[in-house]
Amino acid sequence: MAYKKDKEKDIEHVIDFNDEKINVIIMGVSGSGKSTLINAIMEDDVATVGVGDAVTDGISIYEKEKIPFRMIDTVGYEFGIFRQMKIKNELKRFCKEGVKNAEINKLIHAIWFCIDGTSKRVDQNTLEYIRSVSNDWVGVPIIIVFTKSYSEVDIEENINMAKVAVEKYNAIHKKKTMNVIDYIPVVALEYQINEDVTVLQRGLDQLIEKTVEIAPQAKNIARDNVFVIDLKLKQKMAQSVVLGTTVGAAGVGVMNIAVPDASVLMPMQSAMLSRIAKTYHISDDAEKKEIIDRLLKAGLAALVGKTLVEQIKKIPGINIAGAVINGFVAGAVTLALGEISINLFERIYKGEDLSGINWDEEIKKQFDQYMPKVIEIIANYTKNNDKVAISNLKDIAKNFFKNDKDKAKADKKK
Image 1 (cartoon, rainbow, N blue to C red):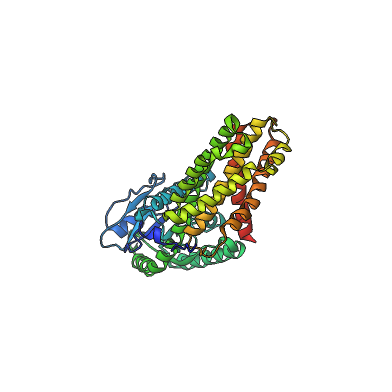
Image 2 (cartoon, rainbow, N blue to C red):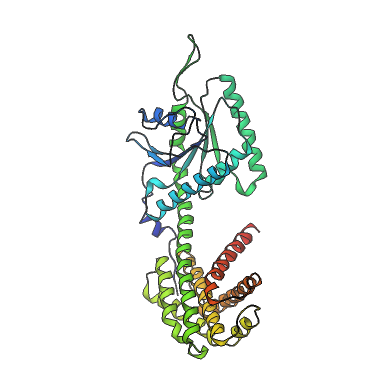
């Protein structure tokens, strides 16, 4: 089977990566001058400007024909943990909606992080927040913008202080580094210090020029990150299908299945596998049918075998009545079958060359890998529950997905 796909093909036909404009997220504490900066670049009072209290609610997008980028304004970042989490979650949801719905104006290409130039402060909490916001957009270019840069002395001190802080942060957090590419002081609105001294606008041209300069690099980074986010969304959708089918299969197992007649489950499992294949845009019917048929064959072999039944019977806390055991067997095999199909279809979607693969051996190997994990999760779940019923299988399946995700992260770190 020579099944190979271009990992970017499905993304490119949905999202127009040739869009000339890039999207810049503008962040900073309330009062740092974000709205004033936006108004200065737009040459219009489009963003509300306030003094003292936060004035930006939610996320706003600003663009103008002659400006070669969009500005995405966020609510003011504050040091309270709940405030930070709210903003990060809003941005994550905003960006994932952009990928899912192919909305180019909801992708992230660059970040301007605004710091009040008169505050003389860039601490580790701020840097950690910047990095955490760009977590989904690994390597996104970041420009630290010192607003209200009225004093020449303060400008030099601020830039040196920020460079030292970023270098220190990146040295400590080597796997969570920030791609800070420049430090730009600006005065967005001329400021009168006294009757004789007025500080004029400065730095806006430099900020715009730098943003335009990094556009090609930023687009390439965004393209890679869009694919990562797209995979996460597909995985979540596929796992949701598996959860529902697992519980359904367990219920059927309890009601009417003697283990030798387990083929009754196959239509349900076949529908699950077809939906997962569709999620990953596997449209070649002949190729898809071959994989699904072999998966179902392996699943049936696991269902009618005695090994899995004996393993589940040994788990403390499970009612060993035959029907309940059959329900857990049906659910466990369906869960493993779903996770294996997600793994295989995702590999195809990512463009992995699977030509020449022996599918029977590959699927058997994966069943041997996943079935013990399912049994282990069921066993661990019973430790904290006096009695485990089929209705608990959804929670057990969620734990399975979580453990598998955690293990994947651990393996990646190694």
